[in-house]
Image 1 (cartoon, rainbow, N blue to C red):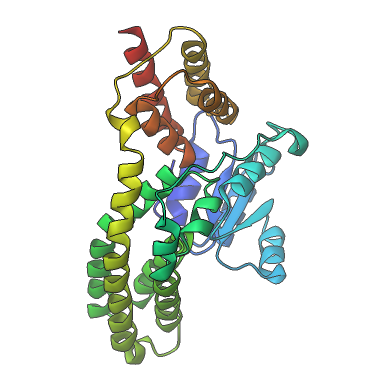
Image 2: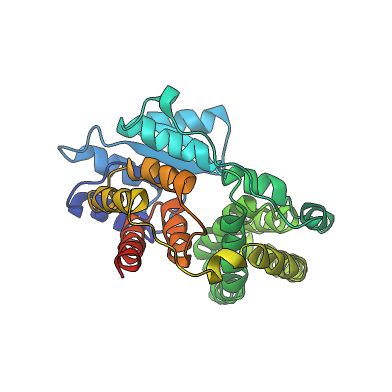
Length: 317
């Protein structure tokens, strides 16, 4: 489950049934920050040992110590490596011992020259894909989603600035900084970081016009550079999306049934079953498997359960 602010997050933790296995806590959130939200959770009886993992762009040892002193169990810096995040979740939930963790996903082949093309326009696609365990199609979906959402985010930023809502502007640019970092968009991340600093400064009104202008210019440049990359990534994985569904009734079906039960119980062992499915699927994967992977990589078990059920229905048809 995702919460839009710290207060909603605390309420979701208290209301969850069954209880959450762990909480990913952003330090900078509207309404209630991560440290305050963690303190509220720890005050409630029965939640003293709930694993809470901080997620923040700050990576200094003092920042990590602040998280630990504030009642959190661990710290994962942003942009984060997917394998590191999964390892932290498994470790703190006691699901798998560190020496028994699954191997990273093997790197997938990319269209010739694509990494060089991305690098030439200031996008470190290689590092971004490695952060996702080598899963280039997932990176392509993330990039496509970001390009779709970016205009709305900039419009929202204009509205915040027009109202002198500096805290909201700072939060939005903080989000942009994190997203662009995960995507390897170095120049746009730098502009987002500068804008974030300006909106958190003592004189945001004096700085806002210049930083918003620079941010929009960097966004325009990024969109022009990234759009062709999305097309190439989507085309490289299109075969699996349009292939006929082939669902053997053996190993895959058993795994899917097991996985659906684990997902409904919010059990992290579903990640291990997904790894087995990736390695042992017979033939081309159907498009529903793509939806399952996307949901699992976002750790959205509700959506993953829907996709898993769809795969089971397709296999039974």
